[in-house]
Image (cartoon, rainbow, N blue to C red; front, side, top):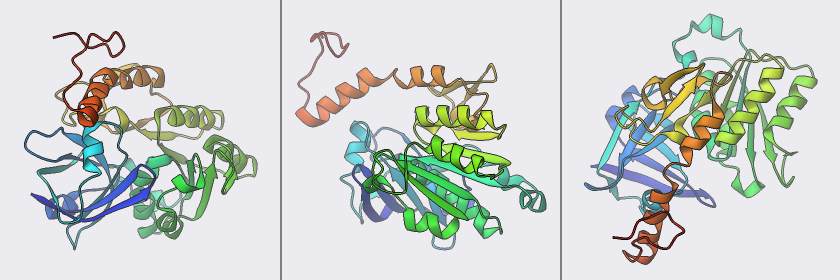
Length: 296
């Protein structure tokens, strides 16, 4: 069992947990993820690592309830435990293995959308700890949905919050902030974009105009996390890759985002029925003509 040491609501529909997992904390790196399971019959849920403390043996995860299992996770409190907390899984961010002196010559730009700020944070923190300051753009619909602001400001060279409604920081999408920074003369060697699929797609279209190599995380389409189910197949440069074992990070300019977004829709019927069962009990058995379920 893996004890939850802290459970906190960061914003509307966004939650943070510190979990006691010494072995995972000792070996994890930025860009990797864990699989959590609440009980013996629970669903396996892949979540990108937000932070880790090797000495204390703590791993921090941030999640957004989007289905039945993650909705049930919001009910867990400090003192409760996960049945399984498996990891670290996936490949670490590429820069972790790069020559440090070469890395220090590069200018990094990070672009995070919504809960994507969580997996961006450990990458920016790692760079800061190794003497490299990165520019960070974080976008949300409104000010109240921006997360980890204090933490991100402490580790970034320049922090640029953006809100769709103009309630805070730059008014507009993260892509317009990218345009603004480049037009002001900023030059970047690498961009890392993590967030909703549509946001990563348009960030890549924007950075491609400026020939900025861009890395994205395909964590949003993962299901099993071990390469066995095939649900996270993604086309990168015309080749089939698996987000969980080959990634989750890939060259964003080579990712077929339209195909990936279609894959995201595949399990909506099953997830919708699971949510109905959670909310109303086992009362829905298909045949309504709306959910796609069959009568049985």
